[in-house]
Every structure is written in structure tokens, then in C-alpha cells.
Length: 517
Image 1 (cartoon, helix red, strand yellow):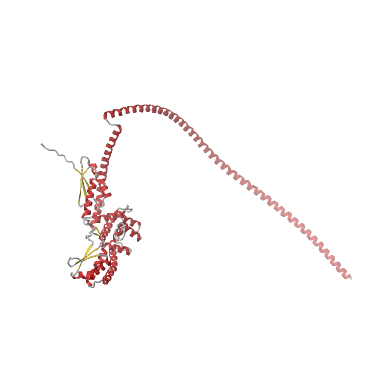
Image 2 (image 1 turned 90 degrees about the horizontal axis):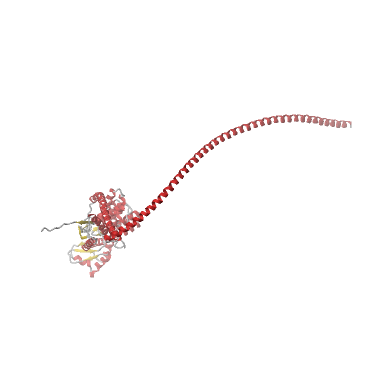
């Protein structure tokens, strides 16, 4: 028991000792912590004081720097303000001087205005006096001359008008003479070169074709029993077959050259074959028609290749080929087309225009003549419609339409095509026309020239390519003669249709006649 009590007592003593020791240790630690805290606080205060001093120093330096910059900027602005103030003072001085000048000028203007009003008053009075004197002079002149002022004005205006006409005629004549001398020389050179380099043969074709036969006995076989063969042939070909008393010849008549050629080839084959009846005729004609399609295309290809326009649409080539069997005023149309292409190409080369375009336009410009017997409209309008149908450009269409001057040419190439067409169609021997049409044209030309005032006689010469006009020398002077020739030429262009050109020559001849007694 004592051992237990002594053990418990020992434990209590140990516990108490431990507590005391821990309490002593805690106090010692607290004392050390307080000392450490004081030391840290002291050091922090020292550092804060140092930082404070550094901050104050930086603030002072910053304030000093900003103060210097502010003083510098202030000094600069004060200088600018002084300069601006100086300029303003100068401007004020200039404005004051200008105001003084303006005041002086205003004073001068007022003096001048008063002077001008006085002078104006004097002038008005003088004008009134002159008007009165003028009226008195008019009355005196009217009394002496026996005519009124209006009549005198009319006479004066007529005189001035005649004088102006004469002067304008002289001026026009001089300008035209100069222009003609230069233009005619150049034009002659170009056209002469083109015509020399283009030597084309033309044949005067008609609307009939003769087919030779071996003997006259074949005529009966061609006619057939009760005319059935000839009727079948004419119905299938669209051509009139004329069998008359002309020995060993049969005549084919048709306006369509292609049909006439188909009929000729068919008839020659039938005669060679010897079998002539409606069935055989139909068989031969159908075969020749198919061959003709190929033949026309080949002709068109050759023509296109000849002028350097390969690659055209096959339908266009067929139409070009048809032109071989079409004539205009006796001129073979394909030959005319090729000639226009050659001349147009030469002219385009001389004038630095598009040679390829001109040749192609020349090849297409008269395509309408290949179908104008079946289509309504002028041949150049039909040609333009065909070109538009196959995708040609507007420039090409204008060149086709303008070659007969129905529309204004819109390019140099269009003018070249018109000139080449005129050269080909109007050269001597290219075309022929009926005597009746020729006489009517000549008569109309002479009547047109004789309708002008002062014309005594008018004579058409050189197959209507020149008109010579005799005028009254007392009524038409030299200057007026030149003006009259121009007026007649313009009226001829406007009212007449003619191939090529017509030269207008006005002749003024003054004859002095006296009789010796």
C-alpha cells in the first residue's frame, strides 16, 4: 500500500516538476520572443524611415524635374505668344493702311461717278441731238433717193448677200482646190496601185444557156410522148427548156444560174446516157442536185482560200459558191466579189487598216445576191442578216450594210469596202445596162442640171459619167460657177442612182461680138 502511495506521490511530484519546468520554459521563450519582436520592429522602423527618406528624395527630384520642364515649356509658349502678338500687330497696321487706301479710293470713285453722271447727261443730250439730225437726214435722203429706209436696207442686204456668196464661193473654191490637189494625188496613187495589181476578167452572162446535141433526132426524145419528158424536166429543174428550129442546139432559160447549171448538167448526162423518160430524168436531176451542193461548197472554199479567209461556216461557203452562177448588170458576181476582196486588201495595206477583216468583209458583202430571188429585201440587208445569223461581229455587219451608203460607215474598213465595191462595179466594161435604162438615166441627169438658174444647156457625155453645163456669163461669174458645180453635184448624189462617179463641169464662156461695117 505504501508502495502504491509512494508511487502515486512520485508521479505527482514528476507531474508538478514537469509543469513547473514547462512554465519556466514558456516564460523564457516568451521573453526571447518579445526581444526578437522588438528587434524586428526596430529594424522595420529603421527601414521604413530609410524608405521614407528615399521616397521624399525621389519626389523632390521629380518635382524639380517637372518644374524645370514646365518653366521651359512656359518660356517656349511665351515666345510663341510674343511672336503671334507681333504678327497681329503687323496685320492690324496693314489693315489700317488698307482701310486708308480704300477710303481714298472710295472718295476717288465718288468723284469719278459724279463726273461720269455729268458726262452721261451730256452724251444723252448729244445723242438726242444726233437722233434728231439723223431723222432729218433720213427724211432728206428718202426725199432725194425716192425710196424708204426699209427698201434701202433690203437693197443693202441683197448686195451684201451677193458679195458674201461670191466671197464664200471663192474661199470654197480655193480650199477645195487645195484639198483636191492633195487628196486626189494620194487617192490616184492608191487606186492606181490597187487596179494595176488586180487584173480580173469579166464575162457578160445572160439568163439562157445553150446545150449542144449530136443531132436533131434527139429533140423528139427530149420532148417525149405528148411532151411528158420536157414537162417532167422543167418541173424538176425549174428551168424552161426551149426546143426550136435551131439546128443541134437546145436552149435552157432561167434567172437562177444554179438551177440553169443543174439543168445543163442533167440534160448533158441524159443525152449521153440515151435513156430519157420521167423516171430517169428524176433520178439524174436528184443526183446532179446533190453533186451541185458539194460543188458549190468547193467553189466557196476555193474563193475563201484565195482571199485568205479560210474557216468560214459551210453554209456561208455554199452561198459564196452560188455567186458563181449569179450576175449583176452582166458582171459575174463571184468574180466581182473576189475583185472587191483583192482591191480592198490592197487599199487596206496602203492605209494600214485590217487587211484580213477587209478581205473577209468583201467576201461576204454581196452574199444576199445568192438568195435575193427567194428572200425579200435589198441584197446588202440580206447579206447583213446572213452574217448576223452566223455570228459575225457588228463591225462586219456595218461594213456590209455601208457598202451602198445606206448606213454611215463606223470604221475605216467599212469605207474601204465601199470604195473597193465602187471601183470594181464602176470601171469601164465591168457592167452593162439596158439601152432604155441608160437613156432614162442620161435624160434625167441632163434635166436635173438644166433646172438650176443661169444654165443654158446641159450635155451628158462619156456614157453618162460626165455632165457639161453651159451657163449665162452675165448671170454666173467665175466664183458662182464653182459654187454651182458643187450644188449640182450634191443634187445628183441625192436624187440619182448611177454606177461609179459623175463628173460635173460648169463652162462659163463670154463672147464679145461686133460687126465691121
